[in-house]
Length: 305
Length: 305
Image (cartoon, rainbow over all chains, first blue to last red; front, side, top):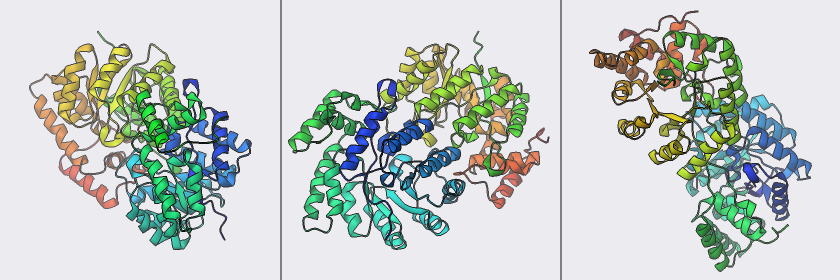
């Protein structure tokens, strides 16, 4: 069978030092901890503040991560960009480093663009990278990018590049959309990842490949356990427990909340920093989050250096 | 009086050659023609497909333009970017080349960000560039960026960086918003540019600085004439004539339509090319546009090499 990347992946949050510079050492440590919890690394996703990083910063962090010994077979870096040459550069670089796949946003500045224009965007990247090892996972996140990936676009890309267009992360939050993608494309070997673990069980039951979820940054072990044991009798209970944690985080701006939780349970206050245009949680918000998580019996283990 | 850049500026369309590479020679020729029509150069705006260009492509084109003899006092390049280091790099480069100002988009990937986060974004760029020659023109274009510049944010930036935050391009299309900006900030020397020439006369009558408009790419002379003669008795007639031309272009996707018109009247078919995710007009659309413009007595003179 396929050796493609599947399971639970985390869009790894990016730690910053003073002056908002990425902290490579802390980043690598976090990635190791996630891998140790059986969670793959969708570095440079939305929750990684990837679009707030320069092209050079992204390439540099990825190189350091691979050089540190992280298995590229567990890596799916985000490589989408508004500018075609930059998407090509990031994607070619990830392929050269042996990454299992890349998670590719559409160009997201212009709104209301046609499927023809988006097809050309993905097509140009695939052709210019020109490497049979490339596996593209489309990134459908209309609430943020405001530019989505339609079923018609997937169909055209999949029929034009069947060996390369490998799957999608569906962050629409719409179960009906996920079902439609699974029904139409999973039988062709197209891997559909839910964009949240709240749809993980439903995704697996319908032939999906797993999930790529913000909260895998803070709750990796239990999410990965549901992926492994989704056919067990207690799967619904596991799903409900995951949903309860997610519901607490969902009351706050997600990225600052993830960082506040990691800062708290790692004891490293530096984790709180987000790059503009984001802003960290107010101290009272952070306290509210931690208090509520603690009251629910939640904690993050193994983060202290 | 102030030597600040005012008047009519064009977000210069970017010509591409084969493989979507920018055509510097044709770009410089177009810029010269616009300057000859008394129109300044807001290169790398939305209509320039700037966010579809890499950072290196933008810097390279700007250097070639300045080296060709274009007066930097007539230049307001777009330098906004989602990633702080890239906005800093582009802005510092434009200042070093002596540009009159920069037109700065907010970071536009994350939606629903706070004014605090946006303030930090602009503030970091201004502080890191750290050059008293820098003049920042904020770029408010909510229909595309989906991240806008509020009156409260302008107030805070203007009071923190009074010598640097110099004005705004208001592409909200909302006359009430433009009026509010003019009322509150123009008396402090804040230059408000309308985002379309359809609001040029109203802008000038209320103390504005001019306009930065897509259709200045194709109708520069008459728009610049209204700017110079807005106090003349025939100003309303001039405005009406501009509006009639704009209304024809507004029936089509703007960037491909501008390029189709320039391709037609320059005789250079290469102008039609747009970078993905945009797509050029269908031949029937292009014919419809040119026919309607021609029937209205419109043509573009002086474009043939």
